[in-house]
Length: 186
Image (cartoon, rainbow, N blue to C red; front, side):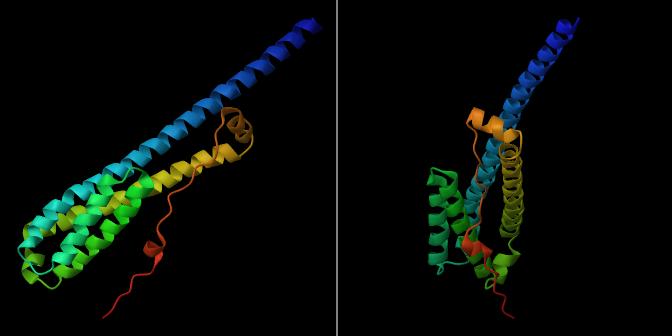
């Protein structure tokens, strides 16, 4: 009888260990997939922003014929973003594109007809909505990284992370120039 109880205890212990291995393996898979998905969503939003740029350029060309430098800057930033091979390259180029687009919108302040142009206003609203989505997807990505890293670093996940070869993943960092407080002149 004592042998039977001991056997059941050993079987239960082994079952718990197997369940923990399966649980942590699946957890790492789910969290890894969530990170990959959120990264893809950032890429989608960056692409959508880049796709709007030619329409924006077309809508302002007639108004700002002598402002070729700004248009060239936006066009070059868009090309750099689309040609980026890695997310950090695309994110850096996306920041440059965002800065260049701010120049376009600042430039529009000097052209009342452009500010009143329905097409320009619609594109400006779409870009604003995309910027909000980019911010949200970056936040979701970093939240996913946090969940993953917590699983990899906390006990008993740290043991299973070592067994499965899982390590911490870096969060998305914003560029130092984006951290600067915008200067507002009145």
